Length: 237
Image 1 (tube, rainbow, N blue to C red):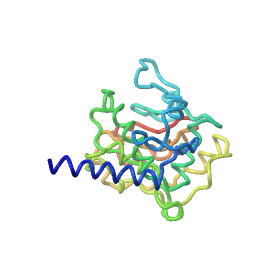
Image 2 (tube, helix red, strand yellow; image 1 turned 135 degrees about the horizontal axis):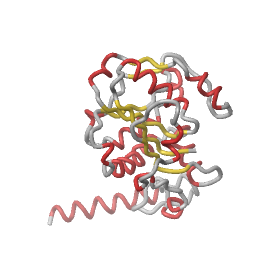
Image 3 (cartoon, rainbow, N blue to C red; image 1 turned 90 degrees about the vertical axis):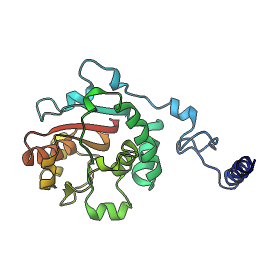
């Protein structure tokens, strides 16, 4: 009976907090129900899922790296679409200090890649690092938030130390594919600890031309030529 009373009190307290501090959908700004997280069910339906986990043939994400660098396996959760729900989601994750949003979608990604055999032997998940100055200004690395969700309860698979960014780069938004590569070439440092891994996954928020991922992967393979590198992102543009 006491346990039942405590549960009732907890639910009443939760209802009161929800009334005083309502949670709003980060896309449409409407109030969320207690069963919704960060994004309402309607806007969630507006997200275009890639369903890459069901593809037997190479995906659009696989093809990004063809002729550039060998990538073992790839997965992206959403297609990025301007003026649609995915744009608001990524903006909030990247610029509004929304670490819990990254964790939430990281969990959703983790639930899917755990069903993909090619990811079953992964030793470590490595978020694409920000330069320390940019991370200080932004407050956190959104890719770390995604990794935290993907590896929920398995923290020994998170590696935040083997790869670091040693110099800042300019924003990639309006750069050509060649300029993007020049912008991130030789900006990453890989420690010898990477040699203990056979298979790692690089995690980022969104992939466009793949220049940043390619630069990180090249730095890793240079230090550990036999390593398998896979890539996971929240969205693909």
